[in-house]
Image (cartoon, rainbow, N blue to C red; front, side):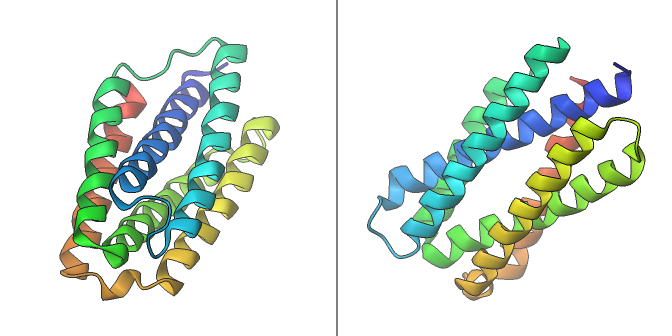
Length: 170
């Protein structure tokens, strides 16, 4: 296993874990009966499965997770709770921003990997398709109607980029 693939696994597992924490924060604040809750519950389940599969691949390939996982746990939950406090459209704006960035990130990884690691490529491709569906659901559910949408979307994307950069190495 190359350092490149280990870094990809580490950052992807961190991202999927972070997503589970965002949804946990949102659901804690909004509950499971709020507008959009059914969509959030379905996306949360998808992210949980992604995280479990990356956890298994990390263990199989003996790659350590990011040391920043406790930080991503707290930050993800806080982001989810904060967007839920703003309202259902902000919840969807958060998902739209995160999934837009993850689509870009996974696409870059697929281009970099080529055919070097078919198992990892297949997993990333499958998850990227799921993330695109989450993004599309978020936009269809009113993400762009969130208060301060351009700022909120941009700030969350910037946070994702920073988390990706840090999780690759730490």
